[in-house]
Length: 87
Image (cartoon, rainbow, N blue to C red; front, side, top):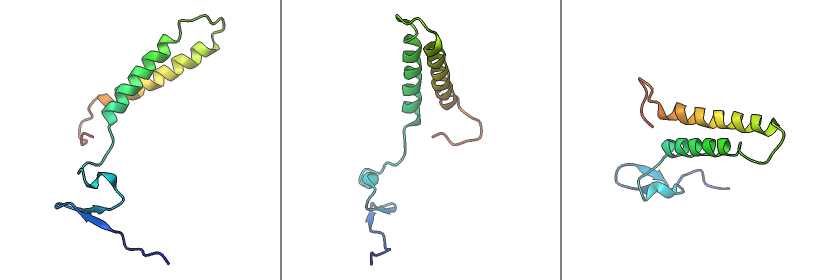
């Protein structure tokens, strides 16, 4: 039967799980600002795809909807909110 005890790495400040690759570097987390920038750029690329040699406008509706969602997400993440920790 497998052991339920978790191996830890002592980094000096806190004991972190051994399977955490960032335990040696001391950094945990994601990059929400980077995700927001990538979403904004992707939204602009979607809007840039409106120019083309297509005849129907169904794909235009989808491109505009996806661009609105991406740019809206980026705007939501960039605007600071009062009373919350900055992540």
